[in-house]
Amino acid sequence: MLTIEQKIEILDSFPELQRKDVSLGRINYHYEDSAYDKKNVVYHLHKNGNGYVYVGQLPGYSPDDKGFVNIREYDADELRAVVEASISFLSTPPVVPAPKRRKPKSGPETWTGPDDQVLELKFEDDLWYLYTGLNLESAFETYEEAEQYLAEEGFVRTSAR
Image (cartoon, rainbow, N blue to C red; front, side, top):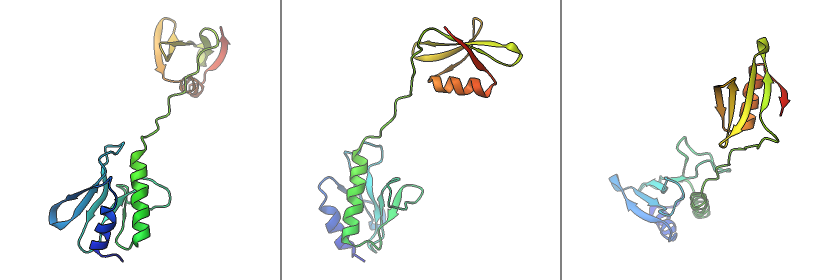
């Protein structure tokens, strides 16, 4: 097990981290260039050597419910590796997949359901609108969502204009 001094020496070797002394003699290290709201890489490093490093949901680690792993028993190589992984993770902006939008091939679709109810599905203004006659029944972000809803409600596609 590394001493607090050895851990501080390793953590201070990361120029991208800023040391922040906090209550009860504990130390945090922040990564100010984080792509997330989360900036703590090292949390509550204590003089007894206990402390935590943020890993989120990175594979290969077993974090607590806040995404931290305990580094009390880490050796120098393990500490460097987990801090590098944390910085790398926090440097990468989250990827938010764009919703799948399928443009209609031609015009609205007619769907028939229970009791011969007829609905019309139209793509307008980047949304899929479901109409009962002239009345709006529902709106969906993707064709797949609309299709799933209609199938769950017992409707089948009867025509595509």
